[in-house]
Image (cartoon, rainbow over all chains, first blue to last red; front, side):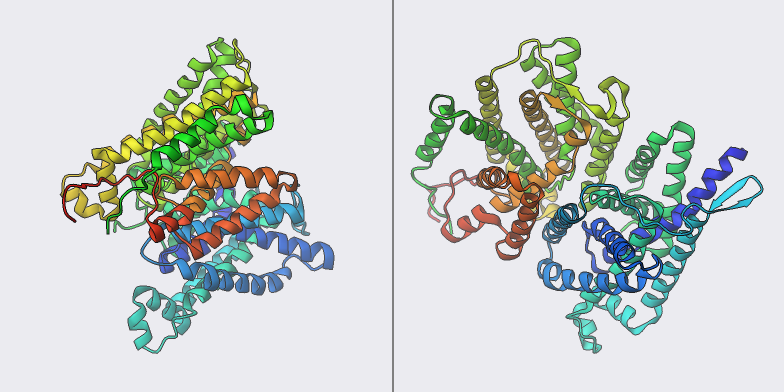
Length: 287
Length: 320
């Protein structure tokens, strides 16, 4: 039992990170009805941006957030406005395939610029732990969890309370009615994507500090994000946190019982079982 | 408006087939290699098009069948000394079994969730095979068939699956199932109420696609001699198929053929530049979706009505 506490606590903390990884995907999925298959790669792009700032300009990794966030906002805004908005419509495939194309372009661009070698963003807290009795809390995981929860909290606040957040939700429900209410809808989805990319930027920097990453790692995190969404329900930010924690627990407990080589495999198997039993997610509502 | 089908279509198709069938006579080794890649990719692309373009099953997990079919062939030939052609067909049959198991899980999902489901399955297989001692983990297997076929034999096998895939798609689309599928593509609820058996038609196409994809992979890996999980179950397969079909024209029979021709030539031409070729394919695909969403053949058909193989049935006697 003692030995179990460590993976359970690590899973809980890792769940917070998974939630913030999935946040941008779930909001775009839920609000704009867009499945951004390039989400993982855009997140990894942020990891590389942060890495570049840290290595070439000696900026503290946490401070690099200040630079990476605005860059990613612009990237997200431009992608939505100039590419994805043009193909949004009744059919599901075109936006999906455009996003897929962006994903392939990004992966190969990163491969060209940064080589296929594993990279990581080094910080002072990388190896530090806090000891409580027999349990070791990795400081980095704790920071991931806290920042993850903060991002979810502020994003919820933004979408529920702010005028812009409510305008975005209104425009996704009914463009015509939103226009009548005085909302300029032409840029609204692009802003939503920009905001999704802000969360992806933060997630990317946290992932870059916590794990090593390659140009192709993006798709792995895309699947994790889908896992979080499938478990937590579509478009739900609170669900994302729960989904993240459940997925991370499944992975870490799986690794604990079966072996570390099977960590991802068990996570996927749990996902598949949930998809087959409850296609709308554990906390999702049938629609 | 109903147009008469292109008059000389059988002549054109026969000419292309004859040219392909006689490559071992007139072509160099390099042309033979290109011809083989062309035939194999046509087979794979036709199957992705059958699923996504006609059956409404967006699959991002074709690599599951490619890897599974390839590994079945590698294991049966190298471990059990099975005849290479028998083992290629066994690979196809094992892919069908895999598709049956997958269908239990993923046929309850629709749209994007179906796509993610197929992808997750392929990822699970990748992780499973790279952790499996029987297939030597991630290091991979050498294919050592008891009767190693010559390059010409492999080429004719590739030609057989290429043409076979084309004929299969054509026959399915001209059949009652195909009619139902196209009705379903236009309006799922109405076609269901008109008696189209949606679930069974979709499952049928899924299994057919699994068989041909698995068989094609077997032939490919007989040629490549070496199979490795990170390559065989790689997402790159589906990426390539998506680009081929999008560029050529999704939901047309000729599209995957034109797309494959462009893809094979482009990737040969750009092979020395490595990742730039994929980068360019990505850019071309996005441009095509933005400018001509129906792809090359889809746009040509729309503008001129030119069709080599039409899944539509015409009733020339009736006045239109």
